[in-house]
Amino acid sequence: MYEAHYHTLGLTPGCSEEILRKRYLELVQQFPPELHPESFSKIHEAYEKLRDPLGAIPELLFSTRLDDSMEQIIEIFLTAIRNERLPTTTLLNMGE
Image (tube, rainbow, N blue to C red):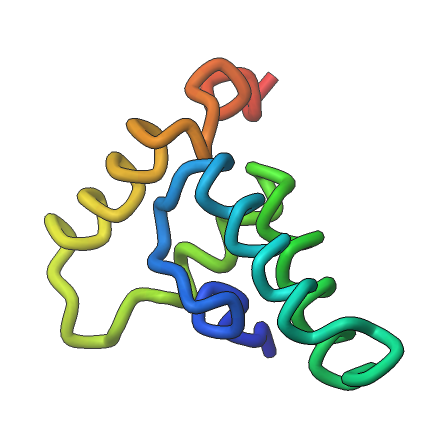
């Protein structure tokens, strides 16, 4: 099962690439690998999975709750697209 990577980094789904990278760098400074290897490992894994826009799709799906309406789920994806976390050209070409 997927780990809540957004939660690990203290971010919300649909955040911009810039915010993701900035938060990652802040956490790496706060939890250097030499002093906090376990925390750093989790932070790095979360960042690696979320920095790939298509890799973020499962995280967006698993960040939804069972009681979310279809409109709320669509809004999560639209927010991610607006914040350039999911490039529209990549999504449109997925079926080809």
